[in-house]
Image (cartoon, rainbow over all chains, first blue to last red; front, side, top):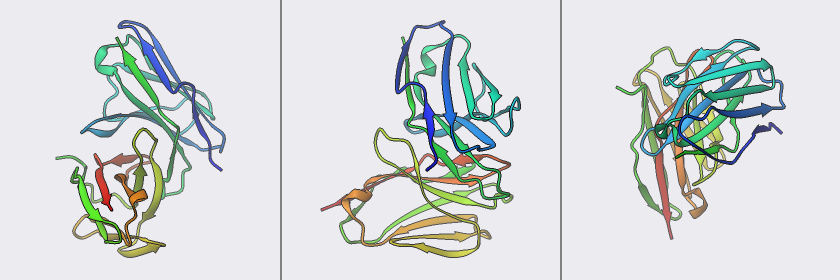
Length: 114
Length: 109
């Protein structure tokens, strides 16, 4: 059973704080992703990684960075949190299988920036 | 133009009816397509995927793909109240998935 675990379910941070969201998967998946989900906008890809120390920008990387020092862990960093980063953040992982990239999601972190 | 487009709904169907959810995509290079179900306050869970033209059936669910028309659909037969959720369509890119905004389905008693 694939397990993707995010460190926090709910988080409240102040504007300007540096915020770390952690994600761990236990299935030895190569790919890991960070999405944010907002009403009416759906799931938008922030960053993804296809290998340790490798990262690629998604559709909305501005204001975020990521770190992947170990295969099982992918961290999302908000360098200086702003109110427009209040959102639901979802981590996902998947295997590399040619065109078949089934993704499994963590439970989500609802971040509120005040 | 969004890469993956869905009607946001809500789509309301009576219990026992067939629910038809539709999705179009713009990237002709996409090879695989996925349907996820998301209950309110929960994370998405995969229902099924399809990568060949035609139909793919799994229980009450049937996915349909038409690459010429760049169109993917999900049919839910014998709809149940427990099927009430948001359904997300996703298209595979280079090692990543691009999602539509989702269609909210309501199955009424």
